[in-house]
Image (cartoon, rainbow, N blue to C red; front, side, top):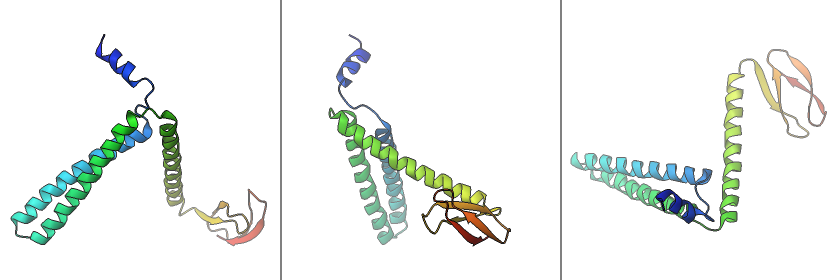
Length: 154
């Protein structure tokens, strides 16, 4: 039997690699690389006689190294877990949070691009975000969500 077939049979009924596992893997390796950088910085500072700063970077090295190792252990545990329903629920929560953050960043970028041409504000009744062109003076605004009418200066 080929290795690929053996691996396929071994992974049947297990969670496997999903979006959360990929994220944990990347963050874990980034933490390990940061720990390596802190090790070099600590050695450089120790060589220049800055023991206090060297100690701080040595502590950061241990923290990041421990965090990276724990995250990679958790990643392995998630990938080989047989409790697929729980792992899928975790992944769904992760994807929901990731989507919220992505939408928030996109919204802020759009506001920044439109800062010279549009003014953003909220409806006083329902809190819906609204946008109006700048430089029109006082305008009557109708909320698209609750049909509340109010005056606003642009």
